[in-house]
Image (cartoon, rainbow, N blue to C red; front, top):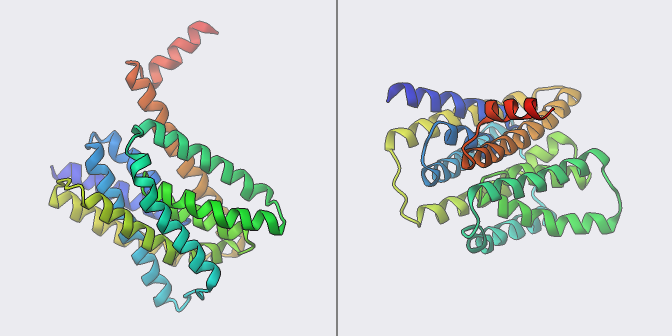
Length: 263
């Protein structure tokens, strides 16, 4: 039991330290599923982790006196994201876990391409303002990634990578609290020791992650921003493919052997 909790502690620390852009749930969820925890239990854990993660990101900003200003645009993004959390629950309940991960992976890959090519224009900015907060709410109420998508939105709207990470804090925190409340209303039971382990590990990593990121040079901060983004997508896709292989009675080793025979 203690060894399993230590494993969860380490995985949670790593997911929090890597996910500077947000989206620690995208890393934590597949990892916990690989450790054979129940999917409903995992969904509650990543919601708890997401709330604690963003909350301690905020503590780090307050401690460093780097709280970004909250304007009308930020309020619009926050309200739209929160409404989409509430509206997406009925839709997401009809999809299986693998489908969710593939859908969100496709959304994130599309967003990654947008960040790389950075299309410009007032019409596009308006389009992103309308659609990306909706994606953020949907992802946040499913497997996580709300903060990641909001960070991306701010970069597309012209913010620097550091400012984008700072700006995602408030809307992301509200989204995660709403998502957590939704899952808790379903009456899912969860181990107290497991819950406490995730909370402590997330608090440590959430605080350290923001302190480290804000003290990096702009170039290294940008690199870490992209690395966090890519790692989240890769982890999500890997788990989705593993679910498909498992459903067919296969694993990666069997697949490699099968491909060798073909080629």
